[in-house]
Image 1 (tube, rainbow, N blue to C red):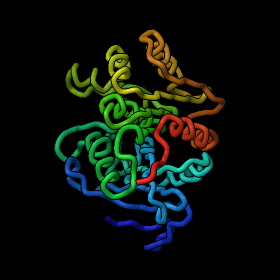
Image 2: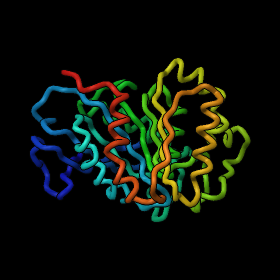
Image 3: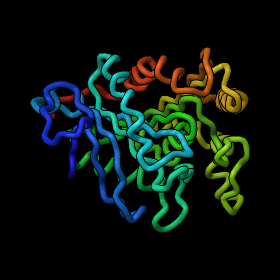
Length: 273
C-alpha cells in the first residue's frame, strides 16, 4: 500500500487529521485506482475502528479530479465526529464519463468502487467492517453513482446521499438518457424503475436515503422532486431538501458539514478494536 501525504511528504505523522493519497489494484478495471483518504485525529495512536464515508465526484471528469475533493476533509472535521473519508477517482480518461457503471472487462467501475474498494479499505485501515459503518455519497453524477451503488449493493452501505444528483444514466450534458443496450440494463440503471422493490429491500437492510438539490439547479430539480414523490407513494422513508443555490461547489461546500453529519448520524460510531 502506498500512502503519500496530501502535501507530498511520505510518512507524515497522523496525530492530527491527515489527508493522504493512495491507490489499490483493481481486478475489474485491470489497473490501479487512486483515491484520497482522510483519517481522523489520533488514528495512528488509537485502537478504534471507524465508520467510512465513500464519496464519488462528478462527471465528466479527469483522472485526477478526485483530488479536488480535499475540501471534504474540512467539512468532515467540522462535524466533530470521527470517521474515515475515501474519495476515489471515477475515470481514467480526460473528460471521461463512465457514469459509474459496469461496461465490461477493464471498465467495470461499479464493481471496482462498490465492492473492491471497500474490501481493500477494510483490509488496510481500521474500519467498521460491515454496512453499519459505510455510507456512499456523491455530488452531481457522483450522486447518481452513489444512489445506484447503494441500491444495487444494500449489504454494503447503510447510508445513501446524493448532492445535486440525478437518478438515471445520462450523457455528458446531463440532459439526455443513455441507452445501455437492453431494456433490462436500462431499468437496472434507473432508480425510478427500481423504486417498487425498494420497500422490501430497505425493510431487510435499513438504509438512510437523503438527497439534496439547489433551487437554482438548471437541470435536476424536477427529477429530484419526482423521486421524492415516488418514494413517498411507495412508503419509503427518505429525506429530500431543496436549498438556495445552483449546481455548484459553492452550494456543496456551504452545506457539506451538515450533510456529512446527517450521514454519520445514521452510521455506527467508532468502536474499540
